[in-house]
Length: 500
Ligand code: NAD
Image (cartoon, protein in one colour):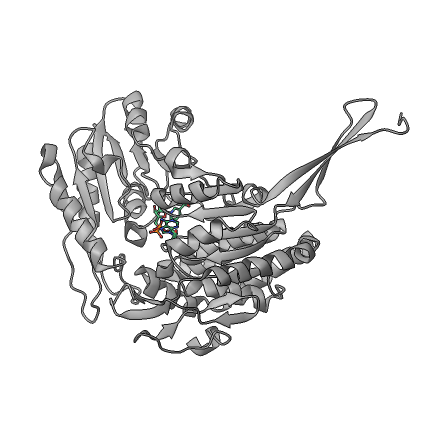
């Protein structure tokens, strides 16, 4: 399938020298918008497309369309909505290669991971389609002889969905899938850095029969996000992004108050006990912080290793890191692709220069890499080997870079303290063959997701994911994700006749 077909209804044109002009998608129409800015391609640094900043009138139009479409969409059956999500998932799978190429341009990640993201997005839609909670789902209680209690779920209304750049299709699928399955209508505002691939989701849903107005897409940065989230006709906001932006969103959605789901950053730990299995360990630790060049909210960027295994794990990781290929992300042999921009590379150099030698730390890797034919920014992954914990701000702050810090520990309590020594609370990995210990540790580590003897291997199980503390609140995924977009209505009905 050609690129033109992928964007057939969007059309393709040039603006500001960029190869493609991203247009707002409101109801069934496309709107050029105004105040465009150029976004560059991650692997090449060249202009990729021009993205508009939505005006107040455009936001009002998209929210108005979602409001108008809401009663009819909310009245559809679960079966109807699920069929649309499933067909949309198939549409994406049928275009996996083409969408993956766009994902590489937008994120710099390697093609195999980009393909995996398309499949992941399809799986997410399928998982939501399997959730059977809607306004007809009812809980009935008759705890008193005189009153019946009926509790229904109702969709909350118009949802504003705001997403980050790093896994743009999956983030969109998570929010749009949950909102639509719950019977909400939605306005999606993707990150301008990855604006094109979320359109694939809208096109997929449209091809699957989604009625006009149920989903619109608006483009822009912080001003559009804040104006959309605070629009008086928006009933629920789901936001994925950094902590600072999340705090801004929380501020504007507090008055008048509305339901808010915040999926923010992380600083996750991988704890390696003395009895950790050898199989899969080094690969799990490395992919935990290098996947997507480290731009993953749950990146396992703090590695806490029992002192009896520290030297062995460090040596094996160093060897394995040396064997990784940093290269052209369009080519299937590379393990790591490009950083999102030159500025991200400069930040990585700064972080590693500050870490090297501080407190006896040793930096392994992190060198700049020239990739023939590509003018983007490439770096080898880096491991900061520290002999003691705590270590500088590196330990507590999210970097969103292919950089991890590794420290030794003596006993279980110290490992738990080290893992909890951050304000973030997204995920943690535990590597041990002692199940009692695993249970003690997963209970004590204050995060929303635990991986046991693996990292990032959650593909086949549709469980909720969500953060704690500064990583946010609320859930995405499966039934818990759909429930966020539903609200309860309880009916206390006086019995007019006794049932015996
Ligand atoms: P970001 O906060 O810069 O942007 C996220 C979204 O918010 C974008 O749509 C952006 O246009 C908008 N935005 C930017 N500044 C804003 C502001 N001041 N007010 C309101 N909206 C604003 O984040 P990013 O660089 O796109 O993504 C990286 C962050 O997202 C990391 O912290 C990462 O951990 C987090 N993230 C979290 C999850 C999760 O599930 N918890 C998943 C992916 C990414």
